Image 1 (tube, one colour):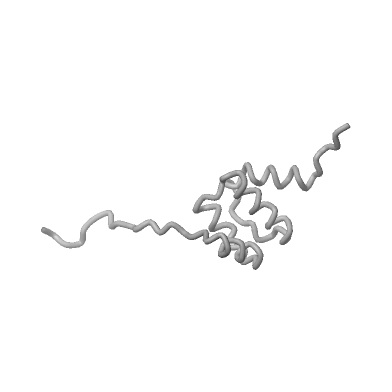
Image 2 (cartoon, rainbow, N blue to C red):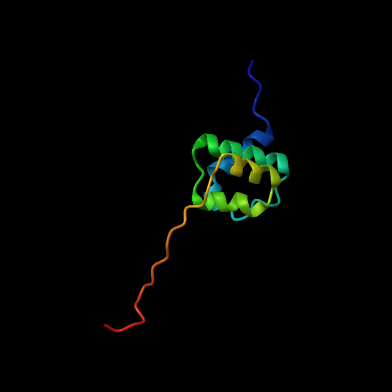
Length: 87
């Protein structure tokens, strides 16, 4: 007989599927945050917004992993919406 998944596993899985709705990951304990980050990578759900969420936590292990994997921000240039000079 197969054992049911733990509540922690279900919670991390739920967080993974709802990352776009989460605004702050800093209250999470370090081991859960690291597990969520690894599962995010495995699922291919690491977007710029999600990366910023993980970076904002300041978690040393997550930051080291980001650096070790050479994950970088995509810098999108901001273009002015109107010109201040008249032609």
